[in-house]
Length: 306
Image 1 (cartoon, rainbow, N blue to C red):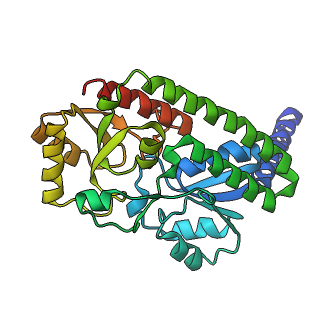
Image 2: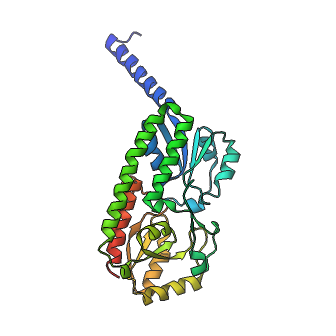
Image 3: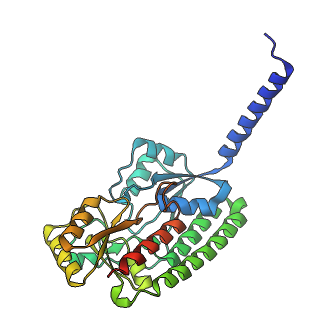
């Protein structure tokens, strides 16, 4: 059976288009990022030259993540693994070994002075990060170091794209400077005495230090263990004593703990914050910049009630 000429031509064009798409996808640098915030930053720096797979996706909790066999397979196909470091991914070394990963690894927090976790002393928490708080991305000035490290890592394995990575990095550094300035402007009207916030786990220490906001949390810097009844009781008394009017739930945490805190302390439950994970694309924290602006808007509204 012979196809009409126009149908044969269309078929050849379709095959050519599919071939081009396959080739362009194959040409991209395969990169694995440990969690959604890092995945967003790799996409920003890498642009069209990278294909990014994120292990812990939007609204998922990296603290309790357990890698699957499919994750090892995807990692084995990657040229670059991007980790946060500071103990945030205790499962990463085992995953890389089991996958037989031979590529480069970038630790995004390299060069950042880690913050000691104050939660252990204050609330008697026990968690897997020792004395180090891994949530350095809560300070945009630290994220500037993240993207520098990511750009350097991409350039090492793809020297031909180094100029593009540098340009993307520099453009994003300006966005981060603008974000930092915007946060300070938003917080300026809130008196120091009202800058107190309750969250479910201690994920905002770097934000607190950068912008002089006091965060209190029932859990330590990890969500992998439940707080003791004693710690929760102490926090309820503190909320009442300091007249904190709003408690916040984090998108990847169980809201029951915060709801109970609010009920016991007579505080309302405020909007959802994105701490350790971005939101899905249809929610307000789909990128790092959107996440930070959403969080600050929610926090300011809550603190103004104190």
